[in-house]
Every structure is written in structure tokens, then in C-alpha cells.
Length: 578
Image (cartoon, rainbow, N blue to C red):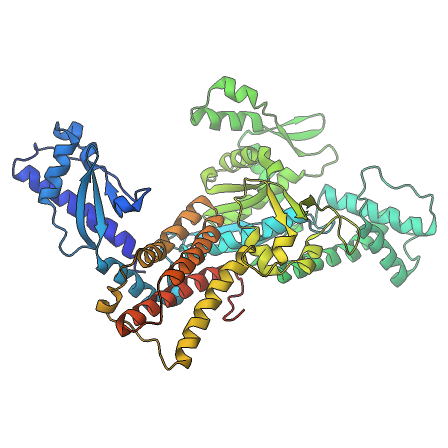
């Protein structure tokens, strides 16, 4: 894909390097090699569109004052054939460069030529990346943390795709282990209480009303057929009845949330295939397990300590972490959740994924080092296991925290949220704050259809452009491909600022992919809308100068394309009228 901004930076680096080489050849600088220098966008672009510290970086190498080096570079600089029209020396030796009209015309031509692909890049080189997110416990309804994690994970996967990765979405269903046993015991108690109210409920059982609802539903459909059977048979029948319903509700809620996974991976597959046992055997072969009190333990403390020491951490720092060993197989012979989790991540790598990205709640921060250590211990690249930790989210309405659903009077679930808030609002708003920050999700803003609602604000900019084009067509003015000379008429500050912002789109996508942070893109597209409104309020699109009018229409169309590409990427509606 074309990237005029990167091309301009590369041109500049080559021109500066050539100017230095010419100065050395002429004897203006001593014969020395300047290995590296920085080209960056100044904080205040009125001082220049790009700036370099080449003269400052070369002071020691060339044994000359930076200001003199800067003057020498500029006197030998050839900008012909580049996207730059001039340069200036500033301060103690910085060199500032200014884009030519060709730069701005080229950016708009890129958008015009690439359309829906504009912003895409090959940065990821097709690398296979799995994003595992939500993976909520199937024993109960999904909550607000799952709502935030769902929007974050899905949009992150989309950003990675746009950046050239081969991304894959997966939901890990914990349908085995201790939580399922607890689920079974809870269902059994509620079912038997229908026929004997004195039957005790387990102290650590699931208290949710959904457990009672499942038990009642089973009794209504099948009566008391499970009252006089063995406990194991009863629990299995109740779990086989209730668990698929919970999973189906999860899948339904995710689909309503516009999230579609490539795979719903069931933990039970790992147990049935023998992969959980195999990972314990592997760790044992490597001398990383031991038996104590009838259980099999993993030497987590030794593994993590070794990794931290290699990273240069001091022993006193490591001691403060209070690392502990972990049980892999309990005294009763059942594997722990941690054991299955190691097997699951091994399975991911074995399926050919080069990078694993997990979205976890911040309360799992202590689990990150354990999993990285386990991946390293079984022979995988722990650096390719990445975790995005997500802070809590609070629902707010009228300035007050909302904890109960108006509809059910119970704790708000994902399904409740999607009944009250437009899906597009939820997906966008949950991606307006970085994952590592706590978030207040304002229900009042989420349902507003005005500029206070960020997604509406962005959608409105797109619809406004569509209506501008439609109105001009009514007046007999058909948008056409503007010539290069016409595009060079876009010289107003608002026009140049907007075009430069458009030029940054692909690099913003790459930055978001590098940081696993789709909020960079919601901020980018919101700023796109702001700059468009600023341009439109300052520069008349419909004007007497036909060439300028067509150039401005091309700019409007480019903005429309960028907004649509972002909203399409995030699976958010992009209306043509509002």
C-alpha cells in the first residue's frame, strides 16, 4: 500500500544523508560516519512539518558546533523530486522541513486509489496471531467486564488485521474442572430443594438466580426423575441440561454484540485428548515437578526466578514478589485450572500461532508471570505470549453508579446492557479508554444522539459529507477526479491540517497494533471528525472556482473514506444520513 508520509520521511533521510556525504566530499565536514539521526514531527507544526536532529547528533562525530553542521547540511541539501519545498535552521541546530503542495495532493491520491484498503499495511507480514478474549465462566451470565473485554478484544483483532497480521479470535470455554463441579452441586441442591426445602445448599455454591431458574426449568420439563438416582447421575444430567443453555446464551449475546469467533474452544477437549496429562508429564521429564502431600507440584518459583535474573532483576526485587510453587494435580487426582491453562496455551502454539494475546481482568496480573514462565519451561517463546490487563468498568447514569438492572432488579449483565444501549455505542465507547485504566461507562451518553456521544459524532461527520455530495448533485454538480493541479489548490491551514491527519492513518493503525491498543484508533477517527468540521466551517466546498470546488470535494471524499474504513473495521454502522 502507498504511504506518502513514510515515503516523505524516507526521501528526507536519503536527502540529509546525501547532503552530509557531499559536505564530507567537499571538505566542509571531516571524513566521519554519522550512524543515526532522528526525523520526527514537531509538537508545533507551524515551525515545520518534519524536523531532524542530524546536526545535534553529528556534533561529536564531526567535532563541530551543531549550528554550523546544520548550515552545512542545508547548503548541500537537494530537495528536488521530494515532497518538500524548503527547510530552515532553528535554535541550536535543528533543521525544519516544510511539505510541498505535491505532498498533500499525493495523500489524497492515495486515498482515492486505495479506497476501502486505505490505512492497511503489510507491517504484520501475515504473522499468525490469536486474540483470546472474554472466555467467561460458563456457569453464569456474562457481566460488564466481559462487555468491555469483548469490545476491546474484537477491535484489537480488527486492528491487527488492518496492520497486516493474520488474526484469529477465540473464546475458551471452561467446561471442566472445579467450577463445573461447583456448578453441578449448586444445580443439584436447587433441584432437590424443589422437593425437600430442607436440603442443604453448599457453602461455596453459586447463589445466582440463574441456578434456581435452570433447576425449576428441568423440573417442569422432566419432573422428579432425578430425585432417586445417584448423586453423580443427577449432577451430570443437570449439567448436561443447563451448561449448553448457558453457552448458547453466551454465543447469542456475543453475536448480538457483533462478535464472531473463529473458534469456541472447550477445555474438556484438552482433558479428553490427554493434553492436560501430557503437559504434566512434559514438566516432570524436565525435572520441574515434585510430589508433596499426595499432590504434584510445579516449580514455579525456580522457573520465574531464573527468568527474572536473566532479565537483570535483583534478588531483593524477586524476593519481594513472594513467588510460590503451584499445584498441578490435586490429592484427589484432578488437575488444577492452571494445569489446563498451560495445556491450552501449548495447544495454541502447536496450532501454528506465532503470537498469543490474551485479554484478562487486572485481578489476573499475578497469573501473567506464571504463564510466561510455564511457556518458557515447556520450550516455547514466552515473549510471544502477551497479556492485555483490563481494569474494572463502572456503569454510571445521572452521575451515580448503577449496579442493578431496571428490568430484572439484579446485577447488570451483558445482555441487559445490550437491551438498553445501542451496540455501536457500546463497542465504540468501551474502546475510548485504554484497557489499563478504570472506566466509567456513562449510560446517558451511550444512548444520546448528539455530539456528546463519540460514535454519533463520528457517524454524523460521515453522514454530513454524504449530504454535502448529495446536495451538490441536486444542483447539477457531479464530483469528479480532481487533477493534480487542482489538488494543489488546497493551501488553507484547515485543509493542510486535515490532509496531514489523513496521511497518518496507516501509521496510527501500526502504532495501535504494536501497543495492542485500539483506543488509538477511536481517538484518531474522533479527531478526524473534529478536523473535518473545522475545515467545513472555514472553507466553502461549493464555490465559483470549479477546480478548487472539485479539490475540496476530493478532500471530503477522502475523509468519508477514512471514517468508513475505521467504522467498518470496528464493525460499526456507517450511515449516509442521520
